[in-house]
Length: 469
Ligand code: GDG
Image (cartoon, rainbow, N blue to C red):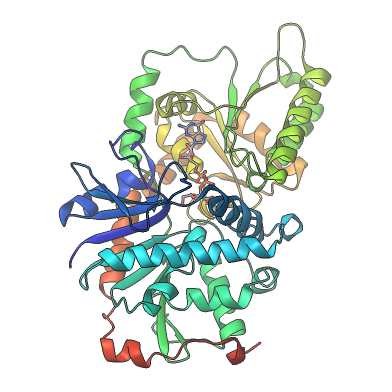
């Protein structure tokens, strides 16, 4: 194989700062082995963007930044990616903000980025494209004659076909996806939705080998549940906790980007129901919610922020005393090592999204625990992580009574049961960490047969006229 070429909306820093956690750690080894390249958006937009990638050599791998004009970036990123695709793929079609120029910008960015990639890739390179901001790239690259193997991983959920069709460009998106050699999804749930989308929209057929046959091409679709650096996070938590005093009261903790998909108002409603039905816990427990801002310029995010401020103020006003604040709400990002310690020193981890591709916080909470006296994870049935983490207390985030019961159960759970549940969760994570995830995806991508030039020339372009349903 040649180089591994990663493409994502944002590139890692050019000096290696801020690498801790996340994708960079996961992909570093694979990238440094064969002189890898990471292509991503420049941190700042530019009125005079370069027509080619701007390269930076780090000691471990090379970075190629694509620059965009501020207006184009806004329409592509805050517009189409985060006001159309993000809400739709999270099942919130009521929040979609359709503007035709958003879709134009999205396509234009993919065309430009594909041209920059085509200038630099070699035939034996393997291209791994990340997430919903970049869906048309394989289509654009093939149109430019790029024959490398191209894989795509969707970090967020894929909804059912009817919800998918609420996106005005639903046909086009399905056709773009069908041009990848490999599509990776987080869960079996999403894999099922991918199969149905290809079947109903493009007339695809599921083959015995699990691949989809779609009008003369074969697309490999598999699920690869993403994970974290389990042992690294565990050490971070253990080291920090050794010098940190535990909180005065048993603590419940939630850590989420302030996003409507994360179920924060529903979580507070469940906590309020718990406090209402269990007065003996008043002044005996506290909820710490950390919710750093994200995509502040999108209207729906301003609304969720106001709602959360209102609800936490309401609970504190209703139940708080001079000596007790039931909800501590922090609307700021904290350093990763502090988070790890906070997870370890919290009796209950609350992870209650309404729909989530995976949810790494669920895995971080488990990894951070002290195995001799572990806390309890309360996990939404709608987080992708629930497919792998059955030993958590699984809840329906829409039902405040279910959540309230789970909080009580978690706070009263005997040590032996906590240890059993934690041990099952941790042993799974230990063997299914982020290295396992990236290795599994790359192995599958390398197993795909490289397409030859003649085949690419003959490849029928999918046309809307070929709609099957
Ligand atoms: C997308 C998908 C999928 C949060 N607050 C702070 C902070 N965080 C960190 C967490 C965790 C990460 O951010 C959030 O990851 P999630 O997986 O929970 O959610 P998304 O950001 O929505 O990610 C998701 C993921 O992609 C990976 O494929 O699991 O389903 O939506 O690591 O700890 N980190 C720091 N300070 C904070 O205040 N340092």
